[in-house]
Image (cartoon, rainbow, N blue to C red; front, side):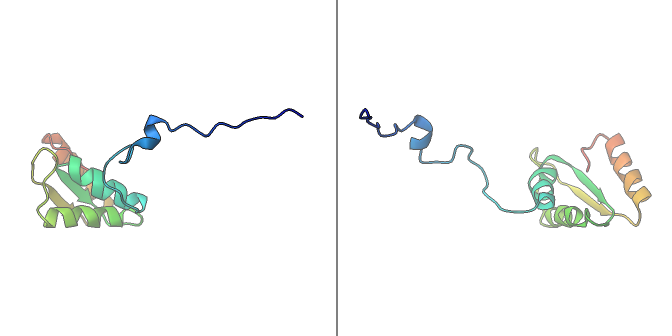
Length: 104
């Protein structure tokens, strides 16, 4: 048999960085929390919700953001409305959208 030598692995530029490849907010959560807390509350000006599983958590998180006085990424105040039915939620979302607001 022939003798083979194994060279040690070379470090590439990506592995030598001390920080994360994609810096941001590190969090472990479910999909509802991720979308509601870190996307919807930041890019919309209004949320109209009807609490029905599994979307209840999204509405609650949006309302918490509204109650805390958090602004969206453009510095606008949000509005959060909890309706008594699915049709009322759709009507409220349509009304906000017609006025030019970004709504969820």
